[in-house]
Image 1 (cartoon, rainbow, N blue to C red):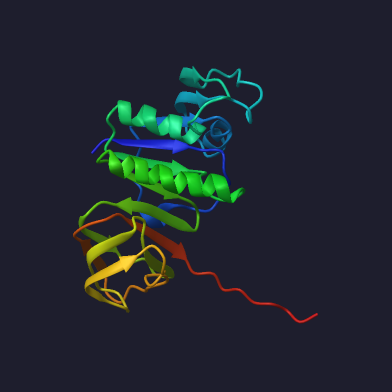
Image 2: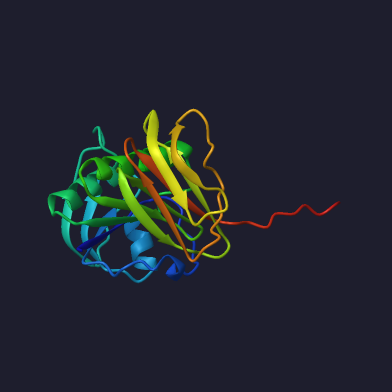
Length: 218
């Protein structure tokens, strides 16, 4: 399968992302200030795209092959512009980095962008140092166990029907989950592989690294 990376302008950490076993990219798109993240992490940009309201000065190091500049008055976010470009090039898998953190409205719009990718029959993923997020169409999917990570399943459409989960602490069998009740949050792997399947609707998967939080008494 062909793979595209998109670097967006959100927050990216410096931790190793190898736990998610992400395949190498065939093509890299940087959306506005995402160019700085790509450069910081040693990725060369094939296409630089956006309205450049954040990256005020275009880079002069010529470390990109194509420049697509848009007016700031537009319906698409810069990340969506990048996704449309990736879909035009017919990539099978689209990995988006720097799509979380900062403003919640931008974070949520990027989740909706995953839904846009799924609606076009492609696979989209948001990846950060602590999370792996995707939107699924009906079907059966297998996920390898990640120690120290939770596995959450949410209905992204009004409801998802025929939901089955196997290989997790809390299983489901032909269940209906709805988008007004988070029954699928914070499940856990109990086998080496977890399998989820469903018959209708859209499902949002969030794999999150567990955080050990504590408060020291003053």
